[in-house]
Length: 99
Image 1 (cartoon, rainbow, N blue to C red):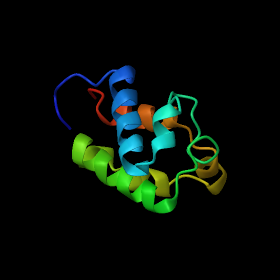
Image 2: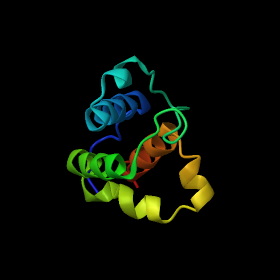
Image 3: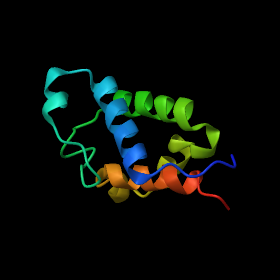
Image 4: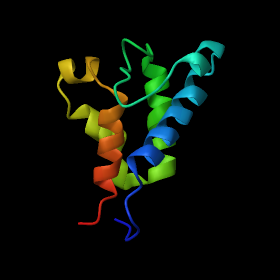
């Protein structure tokens, strides 16, 4: 774990929103507002390959402390279906909070 201050909610949200736009790489995604309440399945309709790409970008940016795929694997099916961007933001922030 690093000793620097945890990134703010806004910083993480902006980073994740940028990553989502990169992995979707479709013109329509630029028009979709991505906020804490945005649903990965209903609002963004992310496909599994896009989730894999997002996980790689999160690992590259935030390191192995924020192992998104391990966290995701620990969720129940209903939690994954209802997953919102805000849950990922808070997961990243928890991983980088001073202990």
